Length: 519
Image (cartoon, rainbow, N blue to C red; front, side, top):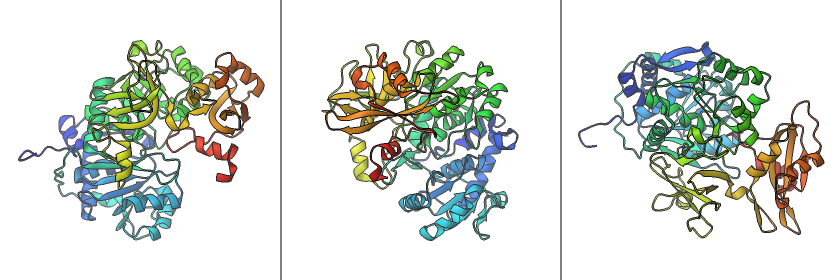
């Protein structure tokens, strides 16, 4: 960068210069209080000054354990100004799991929300590397000596943005690992920037857009599907503590929202809510599902209401935004994710690493400046995931049709191989979900002496609906090849377990129903 200092990490400083009076955030926890870019930048700058006074500088890690709040976003962009690295923590984890993640990144500062003061107190003994504990709420401190974020109001000294490169890390975002310690994907200033560029250019975002932010900020979906791209383009986010169907309907009814991203479980909850029948979705420009395959009936229900509901695709290590399906193709190509975004290359490879032909299922590889720079402290796993020439092996299976449209068919590790035939759980789950009595369904593999393994479906019935397993199998038999049919239907009364990202937790269900000895 030589003599010219480009403010790579100071997104809010630059946006506040370009559009100081535009609304950047609405605080849903404070009666939708609007916050301008100038006001937000001021708060983030004072936050950066406080962190700097506590010894936080370039490359230092700042852990945060909190529900979605404006202050969480202040921390994120304050880290950007200083060149520090934010480590957002999954609040669903146990004390032991959180302690392991802290030991992994060794943050010098730990920020916690009021709901997690007890957890912050419990973690102290296992985190001697944390020099300061900071409470977002001064009335809920784990220890009276803990610093309150309110102390930033006295930190009025200017903060000169750190001189950074595009490869400098900004966030350690942990993958939703199902076994062992989750891996921390290094999201750099370059990867976050290019995800935003790709999204704005390819999805058509502009300064008039407003998104509901109710997916957790410890997940790349909360940080990067819309939040960072909207900062880049000067739009706004409505910051919600978490997903609440009634609040979501209130925001849609008030016509405050043009963009809405969620995971399939959120959309299913909306469609099963009493307000679904009367909701007016006309103000929504884009409604997109991600994080996991979405059953076709969810698409069709939105389409019947005139909403071009579509599915996206991404993963923590890449973006997460990767594809775009043009509106004209939403109904013509149900379930497809479309074409790669502006600065992204993709390829499909078979088991030998050779390129797949049209309509052949293969592993999706992704390359581009939005791909992470590897995993924190794990060079061997980085080398396994990312080739020397920059291709990320996603572990996801996809196919490309003769017109060039891509469709995600599932995870490589989730494929059930029964008698030599591949069964893709997402396909079977989509068919079973079309039955009017099915509320949730998850396909898992069970060992079988003849076929090697067979499919088993764990199903939750919709409220006030009776579900007969034999009738459900007969329904599926007219839509699926015989080898794809579940050998058993297991009815469960409680909601299916989910991962931190809102995906169906197949591993937990497998432990419960197939291999109890491993639970």
